[in-house]
Image 1 (tube, rainbow, N blue to C red):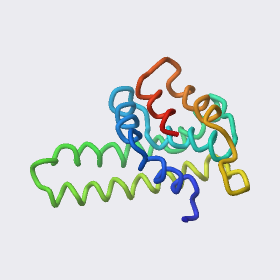
Image 2 (cartoon, rainbow, N blue to C red):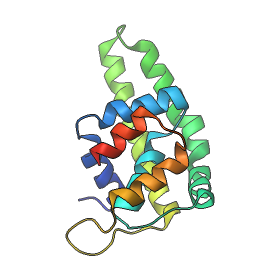
Image 3 (cartoon, rainbow, N blue to C red):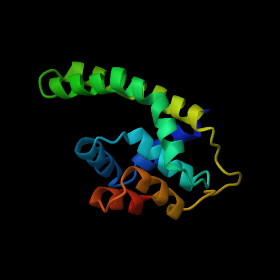
Image 4 (cartoon, one colour):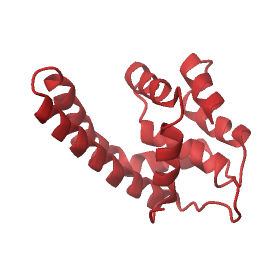
Length: 150
């Protein structure tokens, strides 16, 4: 366990079958931030919190500059060198992951949320789905796949 339960949750959920593909599809096709998707899921599933659109927008705004100035440029360079220089690609991938960890630390701090006490989840998939639908309000197969994997 780390000092950031959002990061721990994200690592566990992202390791589930179908989650990376669904998250990356929503990122690439709809411009969504995977870390914000994971925060919305975590808030509902682990914290038992139904976020409002304003709360989610406020939280997202705290990390928007980091995303635009650090993560997105790293991702663009990493994708550009893929297949050309494997060693550079791996270093850029590691740098992008480190930057995303910083972003998650900032998201966790900005959210003010804590997991519900007890050994199991403190919320529900329904709460997580409601939070995720704030980001993807229409029917989207990638969102459905993500919710099903929770």
